[in-house]
Amino acid sequence: QFQMIRHEDLRLEESLGRGSFTRIFKGSKTDIREGERQNTDVLLKVLDGSYKNCWESFFEAASLMSQISHKHLLLVYGISVHRSENIMVQEFVKYGALDLFLRKKQGSVPVSWKLDVAKQLACVLNFLEEKKIVHGNISAKNLLLAREGDSSIGTSPFIKLSDPGISVAVTGRDVALDRIPWVAPEVLEAPETWGMECDKWSFGTTLWEIFNGGKAPLQGLDPQQKLMFYENHEQLPSPKWTELADLIGRCMEYDPALRPSSRGIIRQLNSLITSDPGLSAHADKDSF
Ligand SMILES: N#Cc1ccc(Nc2nc(N)cc(-n3cnc(CCO)c3)n2)cc1
Image 1 (cartoon, helix red, strand yellow):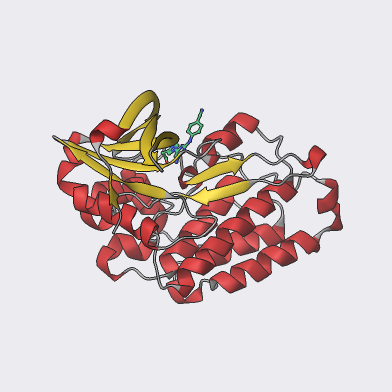
Image 2: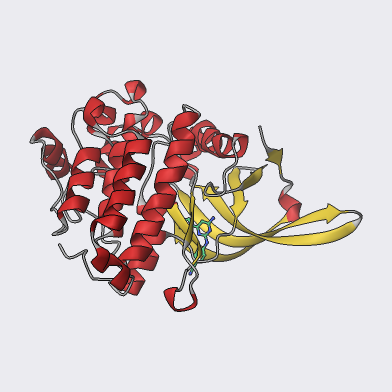
């Protein structure tokens, strides 16, 4: 499992906003190492009181992350339960959620940077696939940026995949509808039957977000309209770059069996990088 962290060893600092069912705060945790006090920056995810009965799923997500370790998986230090508060304590990732970062950078991010991030996500998906672990909540807001990357000094970005949070299998249909178009269509129909392929669908949606300036797809549609998007087997607006549009389209196949394996995704991403020499010149190929 993972470590139980004493409430008195945690300090809540500024509020950083919200996750789906949580409030998030920057904070610090105190450890005694070799007899001396050591403070570590942490991110504290406090489960909303209204989802208190989902705390098993909340902590199951955390324990999933602490059972396996990978350089692109977020480190979860443990949990702290104090009176009615359920808190997940995770590493503080320097630049925060990728969707907000991309929106802030509005289109000034080179295509090579985006492909680098996409490849890192494909690698961690491959790692999870080999361990037969379904994440279930792949999205740009669940990708955290540990290193910004700056092509002028030759550093590349570095992302960490966050915990999946509370599963749509326990939250109910309205939350699942709200997660369209990240949640795979088959998960909507039968949440308990979902398999590895559902992460491939969400990878496609996340790829769309990365190349669309971090804008949320289908924003402004109400749950009913989102449901119709799936009922009518619709696709997200395609980017002009056809090879990218093909990859997104293959991941977002309504028939799970037709989606590529994570190795197939990595192969296609590699061919995207070589598909157009203009890329190295940071040609702006992600116009929609
Ligand atoms: N300005 C700013 C700033 C904000 C946050 C971080 N760091 C950080 N570290 C984590 N482990 C998780 C998150 N996080 C962000 N949003 C969610 C909810 C949606 O997933 C989780 N942010 C760094 C800088």
